[in-house]
Length: 352
Ligand SMILES: [Zn+2]
Image (cartoon, rainbow, N blue to C red; front, side, top):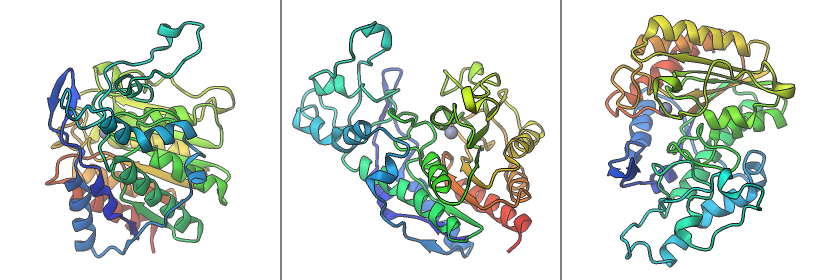
């Protein structure tokens, strides 16, 4: 299947993230985009450049003020002098505007850049550098272009999105995600010919941003398999089985939480239940994270390459027009093969 890939992903090149107060090496790095591209080329995939989309295509999902903040945050950070004092050249928040700080008072934007940095951030592990926003917009363009191609008649298209997106919400970023690529693709399909869109999220972590964007809607069904947040894993606050949607979206959200150490025997049947949850939709978005693989450093799941191929087959059997959107997957030696293997099994099942 065609793959939409942009060299602009390289512009997001974090050199350290702050976790529990300690700066550690990031693993959401440019090499990820390169090893995936190399595997696609070896497999003979057609690589397509994304088409630039409008701000209006981004505001279907994201708050305009949030977009303005992300676009200007690093420039303002540099102008405020933080690269020299205290010596931090990436935007990293240190305070967060919890609702209980304000009570019934209006939420007033703080003056200091160091405080504004926390206004839209859910964590300290998602640094904003000089090229972060451009890379995030290019990733969004990849997802939107893939959706356009599917609307134009392609049966399936893979968007090589980096940075990933499923932890980002309408007006917050975190978990290495800035713009929600999968949600943007789903909205694009909805605004096209798909009356009801399913999202199957295979990433090892719950896609809290995607879930909450569509939580009260019946026209986008979100279904995710992930490491149980109650086993102590990111995104910690949401992702439980009893989160089934609200209002008109009641019943249109499905979470399959797995325990630490779960492998194919637990994961593959859970993927089958996600497929059942989105059956009957008109189009599909797959949040293709492969960080549940046994060798991945970011999760305790133990899914095999054969497990991912089986997931590809089960999703292919749905026979839906499908946009694949890259999410996590951090072990560089296996990342490309896992992605290509999943897509190949999908295509085999779905047919030409
Ligand atoms: Zn993940």
